[in-house]
Image (cartoon, rainbow, N blue to C red; front, side, top):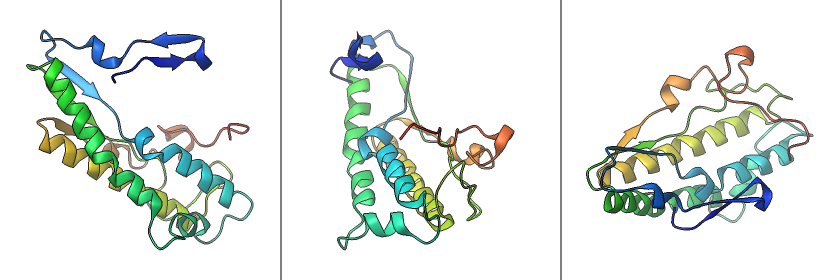
Length: 178
């Protein structure tokens, strides 16, 4: 938000996102938190752990192995970052309505799996779903506490997860992407 971003593997640079805001803005939407929490890296690690043996809770056990759930801790630590971003938006666009957009449902809610499209055990699908629900709750709390409106995309996307074939709104794992 406050620094330039590298694009296309460093070939291009985008200016800080806050630079695009001004007092004339009436509406700002923001979707943040997943990268700060490392959610994609967590999912990639889970796939690595489950791909060859998609049974049990290898991923969940990995993140809870030290007596605390490091994935949950990372998600919880995003709250102040989301709050700070919303505050920064209000400072730059004081008259704007701010919408904090949550994350859609990426995995089945019925304790099933669709290996190999999503190479995860059913129990780790449940675990990853719990992390996404928690992240959305963190974003929602930060939004409400800082004068933004939370937009729930999770509820409307249930049934359109990566395992739903042509009805999917979310892609599964693309071979060779890890």
